[in-house]
Image (tube, rainbow, N blue to C red):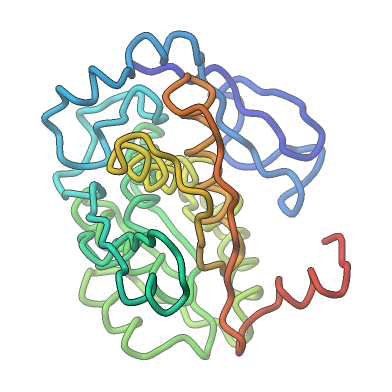
Length: 290
């Protein structure tokens, strides 16, 4: 079932065996050394066909298991993630003069968040590694999602949050049984401390951008969109952006389906940030390279 072939650094292109590294390229470091998960695409193409998907009875994102990085499917947690509905945005079509607009409702996921797609894969990888203690740095949805899945799996969980993290989100973490460590500083400070703790004590780290397997969960939204639209690929896909990992995961999904021949074109992706928190938009406008 597993078709992972290698992990490739997105910066230098160096490839590693799947069991060689857990997080980022050692040469390029945590900022630039994000790893992309590669598969034996010809083997996947034989197994993951339109006919096979039409006959698939699973109504969640594990219907795409042949192109997900799971070694032991028995470790998948019993929460229904994915296969969320697409709603037609008829009022928006009328207001904007667009022929068709579809809205993907990931509020149907277990913790009402897109992040459940990533956490569901991340917890399987943690269990495959034999982890008993896990961690993450987050300001909200990712931590809530991670805490829910790790609680179900019986893992001890430490969440690092910045001092300005929403109190309601912290309450949710505590309800799931996570130990919350409030860092006197920014999210970056919480992220750095989380990574230091994970390295020192061997905790499995879900923190976004450094864990290569989280994007594999996020890509399933794109896979679902293709199938739910009867393989008619959208012209544009608009994605809300924080640090860009959801955008990357969505693009990976379309790329993977294109690679195995299930779709014949790729959409244009548009990243969207709120005006009050738009660092990537400002960097783009200023011509910054990183």
